[in-house]
Image (cartoon, rainbow, N blue to C red; front, side):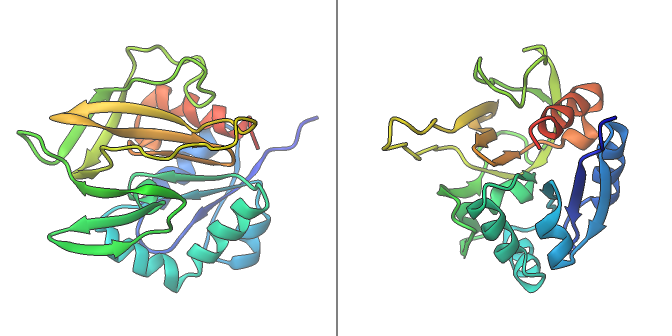
Length: 213
């Protein structure tokens, strides 16, 4: 009999933790909402949600030692998934209203204002996922996911120097301009959209993540 994967939804004050908890429980995870260091470190998977301003999220994450937890887990190859601003803070920096804030710098790049006729980008949109994506395995290419954001990364610059290492898989979407919608990079996965609010398609993505834990 298989045992449910233990997932911690990291509660640092800036995420829809309840909706994430419900979505993960729906697909069979054993979910806990906590900011406890040991529980977050020892879980099979760590989910980092995020809503609001980049700078406020980074402040809250550091106060909860989330920056240490994410770094330590990834150093040991332990899975981490970021959602919405929880994805954005994984990049090197964010710029909002002319103010630059340092991110976790797991990936190079700047989160900046999305240039589009209508802001925020709020609602359902398609994505362009790589054919060998594990995150989007079994998902119809025409499927739509739920986005709510005004900022994004529009330039992916990370190169893999060692040919023995698999290059990160980057999924794109377009709203006014092309932007990074998801990344799969070893133990670190992230989505700009909200899988927990994306119905059956989002549930499939969360199931795909659980299957890697």
